[in-house]
Image (cartoon, rainbow, N blue to C red; front, side):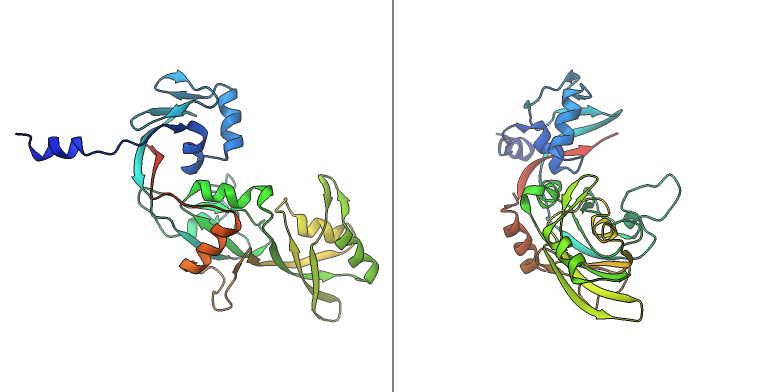
Length: 271
């Protein structure tokens, strides 16, 4: 007769192997492209041997990379997405050499998982930031092919005329390629400033500011108010966090044609 421990061992579900870059990306260790580059540069080891591009890992395998180690295991993942109303002065990295506050300092603690930011905002931009516990989903959301629109409220200083607005709609050449606003809507004016709501299908560094600067205009306030189908709620004050509803999560997943798996291989950091 087998004891209960032996019976449970017999019933264990072993997940089939998956490509290493997919598992590590799902675990929030980088995008697939970044991980593939590290594999090509002979930086990642599996069970003490150099990983090859496209090799598969399975439960129990040990990953070594950057003097750290992870074990591959099967786990039922609780899929979470939260929104954060980012204040001025916070940066979107986990740690800062200059000691500046980061958005990660203000997120709720997790056990066995970590928050992964879906896109970034620069230090002088406020508003909607999304975080998830699913690295694969984060990579889907940030990939250029998804073409998810982002909406910003901008306070612009300078003389904004129709010619400049037409230029920004048609597209202008920036140092990293052509860019444009997919939509521009006036949203009020003061003595020397005008408010606009603009949308982009990309998330390049400082792209909104650089677009306005290409027309000799300066943005002196910038706030992201929407990411895809998720709007920043008016009741969510600066520095506050709110978990997305099931409906909001479903909208985002449909946008990128993403289906989360309840049981999957992940890399758990061990030292």
